[in-house]
Length: 96
Image (cartoon, rainbow, N blue to C red; front, side, top):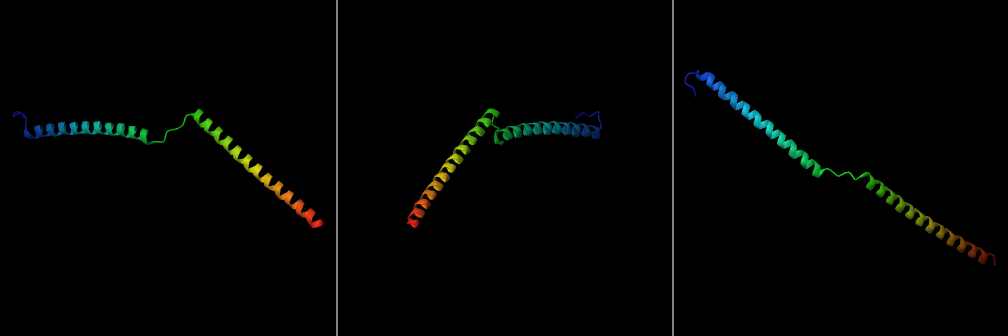
């Protein structure tokens, strides 16, 4: 420290420089933390599928749903047909 300057002035300069250094370090630390948080968020966040892939997936699900419903409809109609056939045979037997 300078002997020519009063002690209070020297102390103020020292404190001021310490505060500025601390402030700079804090700003740098905050920037680094923000950067790291963005990286983590990118890795953790669910990835959005591309539009083409989403459309393809939608088409596939539509096709699958259509297949299932057509199969169910075929089964139901087959069941109804067998029931009707069975009823008509029973009715014929009953009439005899």
